[in-house]
Length: 301
Image 1 (tube, rainbow, N blue to C red):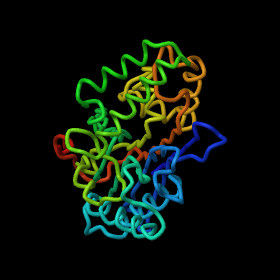
Image 2 (spheres, rainbow, N blue to C red):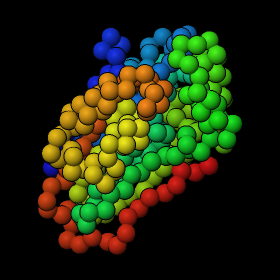
Image 3 (cartoon, rainbow, N blue to C red):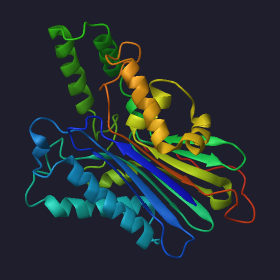
């Protein structure tokens, strides 16, 4: 197995709010990966004295450990326990009832000799490459299915002059509309202080024999496909094999630099924290024969 991991902050002066880790137990048969994208807090810090990087490291570390050590737990159960552990670690010092208490998107995958399981929550993506050439982007699309007035506000922002008071006001209106839908019915969900959000995650699986590679990406890295449209999900695994995770991030940064004001390719930030973990299982299949079809599940709600 080959693991390739790369991450870059959107601004080198500000701590990276992404988290990525991989565990390959000594048995050699299985492993797990976890990638989180921390949600940038409001100016008041979201009621937490620690900050988002602390939160993503705590939550990501707990989720990775449970994914490997508690094979009896489903990934949803592991995420539930990881959220509970993290909340306990700062409930005495921080206001976890704050609507913007630290939170994050989540991608997790776990594998052994026979199966590959996955969990995705919010807008980070897991790309699964099968040995027959099929590529599946496991994505939680609830952020793209918000009530029509919200995307209409976003479209209106793009029509207004950069730096204008009118644009700033409309941006604030749009941000408020999105925030009102965070972790609510009819909106979208991120991992924060409430463990029940794990039930909202998208989960599924494949046989180990089916899978050639897994790639987890935060939305700063998915810009290569979703914003700049330089390639599709089908071509991503081959690009990573030839240029590596760092090469993909270099392509994203070059595209951002070519459109610094977001005129050709509108986006919320000029640069964003970007992380990629690519796990290549190699040429040999992990089991004697592949079962037909792959596994995905639409997110509940």
